[in-house]
Image (tube, rainbow, N blue to C red; front, top):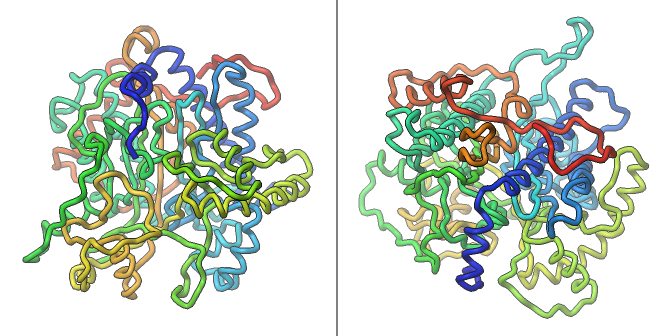
Length: 590
C-alpha cells in the first residue's frame, strides 16, 4: 500500500527522524545490546540442555521462544521508561531447525496439534521434521535463532546459526564436541559466515572510499554487494536462499512489513527466485520464451534495485541465508514453500503441517468487527504497533520467568489463548491481520520447470502465497510462471529435495565522524559479530579461487578489517553483563 500521509509528515517520518545523531545512535545501541543479551540467553539454555546436560527439565522449542521473548521484555523495562512512546519486541524469537527457513515460533497451545497433525514425524526419529514436531533438538541439527528489539522504532535484529554436536566427555571430563561438522551443512555455515564478514567490511568502506578494493569499483553499491555474496555462495557450492537481503532500515521500517507496506525510496539488494531464473536461462538453450511484464506498482521507488550507493549515516540490515547443493548434480532452482495447517489427502508423506505463530497487522484494511472478543483483541494488537506479534504476548501472564513455577505460568497463557484464538479468527478472516508464513527451502530440477505445461501463464493466482515486495509478485517472470504453478511443479516430481538453511543476520550502523568515537568514522555492529555470534566448528572441503578479481577483493576486505591501525574501524556491541534485576542507566558501555 502507499503511505497515506501528507508530504510534510512523510519528510519527517522518512528523513528528519532518520538523521543519525547521538540520541538515535544510543537507541540503536541499547536495542542491540538487549538483542545480543537475549541471543546469549537462549543459546545458553540450548547449550545447557544438549551440550553440558546440566538441566533438570528439557525445554521445548515453544517454551524456549516464549522464555526468550519474556527475557527481552524484562530487559526493555529497564531502559527509556517514560522517555519514548514505543518500545518492544520487533521480531518474536524464532527457532528454525534444518530446512525450515523462517518464522517457526509455535504457541504453547499448538503442541497437541503439531503431534496430532504430524504423527508420522513423531514415530520416526529419521523423519525430516522430527525435531520441530517433538519440540526437542537432536544431534546434527542446525538451529537458526532470530530475534529483535526496537526502541522508539529504531530496530536491532539478529540471527545466528548454531549446531547441536555429539558430546565427548573423555578429555578432562569436560563436555566438548566430538568433531567438526562436515558435509554440505558445513559448507553453508562457512560460506554464510564469510559472506557476512565481507559485506560488513564492504559497507565500512563507504566511510573511507579510498580503502575500497579496486575490483569493486569506485563506490559501495548494490552491484558490489551482490557480486560478493554470489561469488562466495558459488565457491562453496551453495545457493543464496530467496528472501536474503542487504537493505537500509529506518525508523519503524526494518523490513518487518515487506509485502504489506510499499516503502518509498527502498535501498537494498534482495535475492528472489527471479534472479536465479535469469542466471539459469542465460545458460539454457531455450527458445520462444514469453517474457512476462511485471505489474508497475504505484510507488516506483519501492521496487528494489541494485542501482544505489551506500552512504554514511545510514543503517543496514544484513540478512543472509545459504543452502548447500551437495549431491545435486543437475541444475535446479531453490524455492520457498509455505507451510499451512490444512490437512487432507493432498498432503504427501514427510510434509509438515503447522499454523503460524506470528501475525502482522495490516493497517490498510478496516472492518467493523462483530464479536466483543475480537474488538478487545484488536485494541491490544493496535497498541502493539507495526511489528510482528504473537498472541501470547498479549496475555496478562506475559512475560513469564524461568525462576517461578513455569507450568502454572504456561497454563495461564494457554487459558488466555483460547479466547484470543476466537477473536483472531474473525480478525484474520477480514484481513485485518495476516499470518507471518512459515517457509521451507526446496530444490526443484530446472529441466522439470522448463518442461512443465503452463497454459494459464501468470494469470494463476495463489491466495496462500507469501508476502512479496513490489515488482516481484511473480517468482519466475521470464517464464510467466505464477507462485501457484511453481508450487504445483515442485509437488509433481519426486526429484524435489528439501535443503537445510543456514542464516546469519546483523544490524550495522554507518557512523560518520560527527557521531563516531574520537571523531573518527566507524561502523557500529549493533548486533552480531564474532564475539556474540561465533561461528560453529565446521570443516569445509571448498575454497575460493584466488585468481578471481572478486575473491581478491574479498581477501583485501578481510585484511582491512583486521588492521586496527590503518584498516577499517569496526566496533561490536557487547551483551550486558549485569543481572536482570539490577537498575541501570539508559547509556550503556560496549
